[in-house]
Image (cartoon, rainbow over all chains, first blue to last red; front, side, top):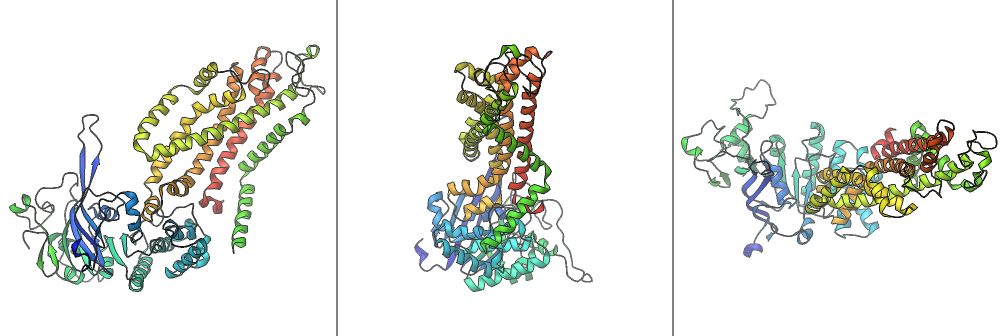
Length: 326
Length: 286
């Protein structure tokens, strides 16, 4: 808090955990805990894009929702512009919502089917009393233009749009309150490949024009490489590696990152890649393995990995890895 | 632009009605029945209460279109008058039960500790057959229009509560509700603008079924002598009085029964139609 003035960091997350308690206990079954996000730390600068990648179920979406305070963190802190928002009550949180927004994965279920497109985009301005009724209308029209939708489409209902257009609507809604941070929760993984490129380029253009910061959650490494300045790799609720995008893709240090990159199909079918594909499934986050969580699938695992949990530390300048061996 | 946008939608609605024969049929029967109920005083041929023992148990004829009952009262006039009771009870019960049920259901769907208590009470109410509960409630009070409505509303409310609660529980998990929270939507607006409109379609359908079931319940109550007082002819108590004479005068049971069947059918047809029309995805497709 003291360093607030000198701080150019928009978002600082430290030791963030989010556990879910599964019911039970009624008929003798023991209540269980899902360690969805289990102590992650990173920061995000103004105008920066941090990619957050990992397999399904590794907790990356939960991390995004917890940072947005759509979920309450179990422990840890989230600082937005130096202000800790991790323990704020709903009413205290409201002013911060203006500054952080979200784009969802599914463009179909993330728009209220009973509202017109214009009303959907204008709603954040209504909620935060940003403008009068006619002014809201005009600003919503501007946002439509900005995301590449025709103004005439404002009277339409969500089901009358295509998937890509719906995602543009979702982006316009996220922009409406004038945020500086947008959490993109797999914003293109439900779209066709040709539409994906359009949406990604739109996001990049908007970032340039408006100085936005993105926390870009995805499992598609090619997309993440294209849009992010830095990338964080998550495995079973933990961040195992964070680095500049170029460094990470050129020289992954963590065995898991290595395996992830090896699994990306090569565009040229004649090029034979040396593939170190992962075997087995991700272990259950209900009983994560002791020691390094990746040791059950790691080709290099040693005895030490099974008992001692590695910490995330800088191996090179700005390249952080949690591995005993690297 | 707003004028242009509104016109094609209205005409789309109109073609939807015309292309959907069940709605049209339901609407036609309902309009007729409502007209009959509203204009009843002009439609009946003689006073529905007038006793005329000389003409008792007469079959349908030119003088008495639907025949007469055991006291010689004109059945046509009584059935016409009875439509008022049935329609009023049906509409009143549907409105009151839906409003109360929707409010309780919304709260139960959002507040967990309320949910636990309310749903146990609703389970208790549902465990008792509706008709028994209504008879028990009628036994506690004097028979009048209001008490009949209340006695039918109480067993019907749990059906609405369960429906609304389950819809709310599933809507809460929808990303658009999460998005609404992320854009700072206040709780009351979240309920009114995001949850309720998406719950209206199933609610209206359920309301029409409750309307139909209320008419039947009212008829059963009257038939058992626990419903509307005998001084007001309703389809139920006309049938109740006619049941002893069914072997010699089937029309006393037949005509009110036919009207009751038609009314319930019309309400159900309308319910199905409304459900389709209220879904923005269906408006175009139909």
